[in-house]
Length: 152
Image (tube, helix red, strand yellow):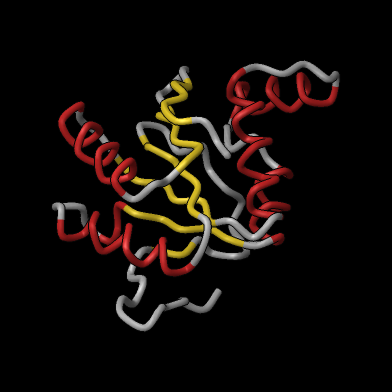
């Protein structure tokens, strides 16, 4: 996927490999952004706020939404159990959040994921996302999903 840019900021965040299946972003903050300009400003704020480009990933488009839909992001037995539960129509917080992000990608929004291995980094990234007017902000822990700002 080619990088997008607005007139001021080139988005330097990692773009997901189009052929790769999404992996569950454990210890990440994820958020929705509405357009290229907002993505550019947010990525610039994150990188100037101490986050490395390698810690930031941006996904957009129907193809990214389809890849997200096709996998739980989990591997091994956990991945198999999540897949079976989805097929049977069971939904937990993780699956509901995933559905919101998938629909947002199909609707032209951007999904941003930021690695936050410590509480301090999490707090810093969350404040930057709030200041950037991001929505659908959630923290994805190993076995938890904490919804921080609802999607619009």
